[in-house]
Length: 73
Image (cartoon, rainbow, N blue to C red; front, top):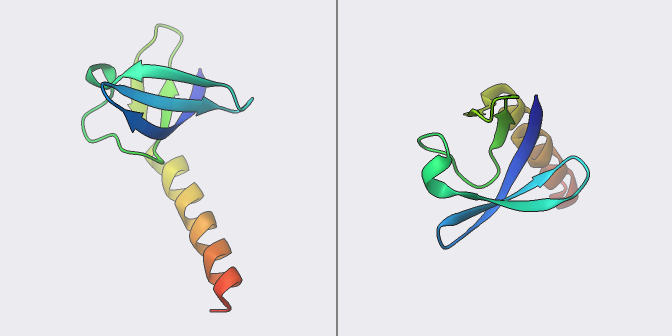
């Protein structure tokens, strides 16, 4: 299984980044319902995509803490 993060949307594509910092495009029609920028996707060996809710929330919380620290909150 592979994990990628949706970096941004460009037209009909979601531009995703993997752990090696490689970028590639996935058509938005192939994404799970409700997928948005910042979501972590799991890709199974057979190519099925799903949102990894736990990992997405963990990363968002970590980013929020870093932002608070930078702002002195």
